[in-house]
Length: 118
Length: 147
Image 1 (cartoon, each protein chain N blue to C red):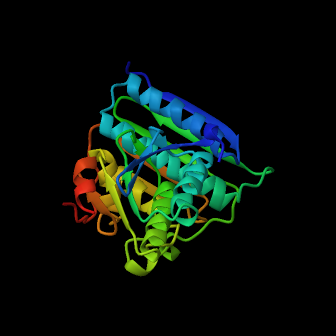
Image 2 (image 1 turned 90 degrees about the vertical axis):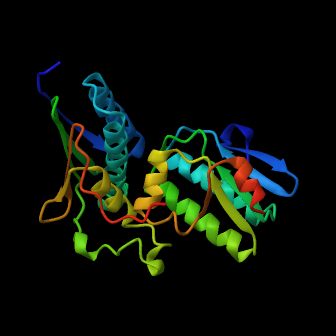
């Protein structure tokens, strides 16, 4: 993938991959597609099994983006890995709570807390 | 500012055009000092409604458009979004919170609109949605199981 199209920053901490969203608004269809491709690649192409998604920068998140997260969760589970979400603002957490996805995803307060859970 | 604002705009079936309308409405709310939470909810609901109209209603067809009407004053904002699709019946949309539907792409958008808006109403055909947010008034919350 061209560097110019990266919408997620990737960092390795021991054997855990931290994927941090760059965008404040994960709304636009085109961006959501790119994010999806990038995240799925972590599992499908790179074979990573321990992934933390960091939402520090995210101020808006649409249902289309939630769809990508659900697909990613499925892929990670299929690979017998673990996906954790962290640093979600209260407004965004409410989006997860309303849609009951807070029960599907493993959500930690901070990146440190997420890393401790592996 | 206390005067009422009204505008209507017709956009092609292109989600980036929808983004521009969202920005216009959000900026008008910010000028009128709507609380941050209202602005967040309206922006999210507009995104969901516009994507539904463009993708599900008009099926991204370049020869179909979406008509948006917006009324804003210091008490409330009302937005009507109409597409040229066949419409749908809201009761046919599966409950996205049921385990068997978690993977399905549809339903969550409508659910979010309902949670953040004071009013969400479809016309009989199901190709026009009306959204309303009353300034500073939290919608009746659905039963969520927060932590």
